Length: 219
Image (cartoon, rainbow, N blue to C red; front, side, top):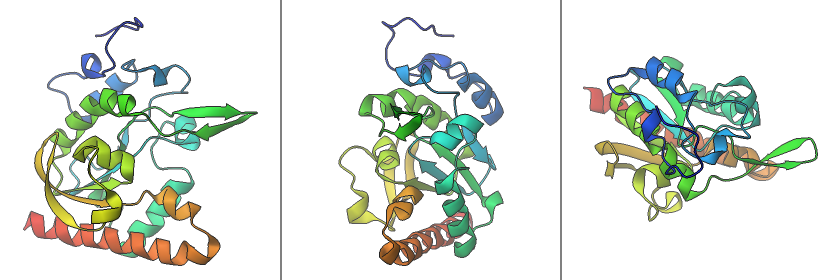
């Protein structure tokens, strides 16, 4: 299923199995060479959480800690996300978490690996995994965490800053779906000490809106 020839198209599609469940996808993703990011990364980082959850949270890409552990949202941003979910009254069993890009893109600075934003080509290459996941999970609501996730699902013209926190019926690669876009938890971590409480409160408010919308969609 696919090969590592450098002339291959930038797409994960050849590695995405048909008639698969989430666990099948997770196993298959370990062999993915749909773009060049697999080479320096420690491993693929696929998803976590309930594969039948009413909320699907889509982030950008794994970070350094996630790359080493192979699990999404277990680093500092993941801990903040969990705190925000708790504050918003969202049980973890109601959440499926994944990323638009499954390998860590970084630059090396001495012994440190510094996050580098995925390119459009990486987002497009990884999209078949995200499409397959969301088709199987079929969430009541999709939450885009940050601009990269929003670009992956809603296109390059969508601006999180303009429509943040709104529940919208939008065209996605898996059809017209209720979608809410908010900031990535790492953006809250980057806020200054003076702004941190307000940034966290806004993030919690968005997640609370997502919870309420997902609940109403399930009725």
